[in-house]
Amino acid sequence: MKRNAPIPTSEIFTRLERIPTTIYPDAQAAAARVAGIIAATIRENNSRGKNTVLGLATGHTPIDVYRELIRLHREDGLDLSKCITFNLDEYYPMPPDSIQSYVRWMKENLFDHVNIPAANIHIPDGSLPEDQVEAFCRDYEAKIKAAGGIDIQILGIGGTGHIGFNEPGSSPDSVTRLITLDSATRRGAASDFFGEANVPRRAITMGVGTILKARRIFCLAFGEHKASVVRKAVEGPLTDAVVASFLQNHPQAEVVVDVAAAGALTRVATPWVLGEIEWTDYNEHRAVIWLSNKLNKSLLKLDASDYDENHLASLLRKSESADVINRRVYGRLFATIADNGQLVSGKRILCFSPHPDDDVISMGGTLSHLVRRGNEVHVAYMTSGNIAVFDDYALQMMDFWQELNRASGLDGPKAQAFDKKVREFLSAKQPGQVDIEELQEVKGRLRRSEAVAACRWMGIPKSRAHFLDLPFYKTGEVRKRPIGPEDIDIVYKLLRDVRPHWIFVAGELSDPHGTHRLCAEAIFAALKRCKPEEMPEIVWLYRGAWQEWDIDLIDLAVPLSHSELTHKIFGIFKHQSQKDKALFPGPYDDREFWQRAEARNTDTAARYNRLGLPEYYGMEAFVRWEP
View 1: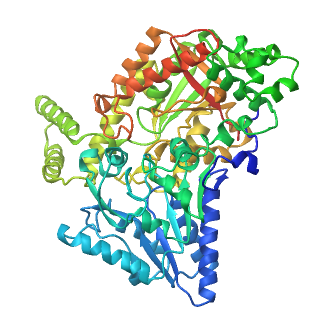
View 2 (view 1 turned 90 degrees about the vertical axis):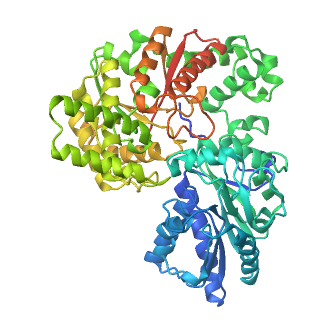
View 3 (view 1 turned 45 degrees about the horizontal axis):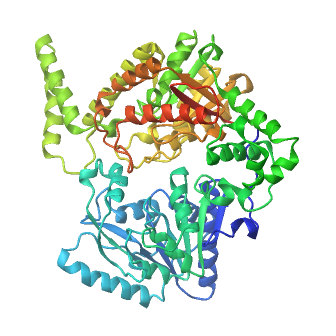
């Protein structure tokens, strides 16, 4: 069943969108188009001897725009020497050379690679004494005005709907100022600062009123985790509870999204309520599931009046009867359920786990099932996960190792020097400081031992646990390098060595750290290298700790009994460094990973049951990847 139905673009389907919204297949395509418009504006202004004034954002969202501008500068001769830039915001306090500083971020991701004069670059100064900040903000506003105002403003959108650091409650006529960050914003930034406690509580931000004075605005959003807030900003009321909704009043504002971030917009989620659509198999499938959930009626109980009264009369006319449609959709869903006796046996299985615990959190029950079915199960841990270990836990383990070394007579000069260096670093470590290599090694070895223990619990021998330690991750920082040839080579070699029939890939692209997304990129690039005889039979995508697949997307659902889910939870407990509280739990969910996994698995089973499918205690769900 093909799911790539075209997204409607006619006025009848976009009529609920109060900000013009353009949907692209992926973030790269969207970024290329925005960068192209910026480049065309620069060239036009250059030809007239005019400056181009750009308002710039930081973070994961605009990085592909900046990479494309760098490429255009290097390969096409784009001249940025007459550009004047004003950044949206900066944490306060924040030294400009800190690894979390937006000054440093902009240099590394744009300014060091193009020819914008240093005198033309303006970024809020997070290093000022507090009694000078107000005057600086007034001066920032004056400089924007003196430059002639902002020609093009680039924005992202935060989980609370903020633009810049204009948190909920910000006034539409606010100007550049020092603000207090919302707790959700600070949790969202925790990964960049190695823990929420290290995130500054304040920031300097360009105001909403300042942003709205820009002549043209592009608000970018990518990934499933932005879908809900995009809908609120685009289709919801004008409100300071979702500051991005103020863009509805701008004559040249545009929201630019990928398909995932557009997923909650009405024309994407439920286009049949807006107008006549083409009734492909997939549109039928998701519409009937939607109808069943909306009416709280199981699939086989839906009748003709349900279709007629809920925008699905045209679907009913297309088929023989409601009963025929109901049975067809029920049959498709029933076919996705693979009880223990229906799973494959005698196959080589390879699960790619971005971090050392994603395998057991996301599909520990399925892996245990596959082992019991006589499959040769391998797990590939793609990164060390060493940045996600609390210092105190690492120190606790070092105390244990030190005592063990002394008791066993292994406390030699080399071990003592290593121990001393790590302890001295920890005693002087500043908040947000990058770990020295020795401490990174300690934390990485801790997580490796936990992964081996979890594999053993699931019945997977240590010899089939592969630790790839991909180079892109080895920065010691949360911000990672792009995937490179070395990463792809390592993954390809493993595929060639194991020759798996099935592989499982983390398709959880809402991962707040971006690591899942980058690991998937490396895997798909490696698969492109595979010869026909090296290709796996099936590639399955699983979701991580953050969210589950929608029912209409699921191709494989593996049921779990109460005891099987409990066994999986005990496997998650093997990751003691992540127990009780993870260093990076995500911005909107304080539950432990085992609690999230339990809730997600039981909820998936309940959603199947509400549709009238057999009742199970829990389920792990997968989507089949099609190249």
